[in-house]
Amino acid sequence: MNDVFAGKTELSDEQLCRMASQGDQNAEEELVIRYMRLARACARPYFLAGGDSEDLLQEAMFGLMKAMREFDESRDASFQTFAVVCIRNRIRSAITAASRDKHAPLNNSVSMETRLLLSEEAVDGPEEELISREEDAERLAVLKEKLSSFEQQILALYLKGFSYREIGRQIGRTDKSVDNAVQRIRRKIAPVI
Image (cartoon, rainbow, N blue to C red; front, side, top):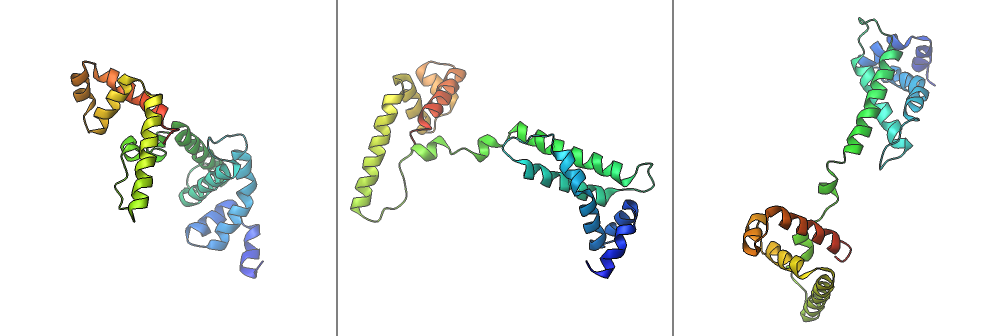
């Protein structure tokens, strides 16, 4: 530990926070060292879906950094009290965002059109083209086994670019019926493709 840093261990949290807000990295590091155990204690009781305890600790540390940036000595709260609130709020926000899972369909999906349409990439030669056609034919055969004739009809129209409403009009069904069929098709073909 260097001499500049050694003298900061006797300073109060509030003094260190003031120094850190003025750009003193040694003061910031001292606060992180002092509050690492508290951050772990705040993160320990929580569970993050799709994450682990280190992810929660990282969120806790982000909460601590926010506390260091936004602490206001003029309020009637100690830095420790403010830090605990910031840390817990950051952890709860991360858990809420993870449990919402609102971006999962976008992040984890590949469009059915992309997966089903024949590859339009250029092939190097006749052998690759033949292999590609055979693979596509095999996929289509497996799909025909898995899908009912109604679902095959829906899929064919869907892949041609028709909307649910247009498909419904052509086959005499409601938009919702078409949507339900498309969702069943997606579930059935996901393991195949």
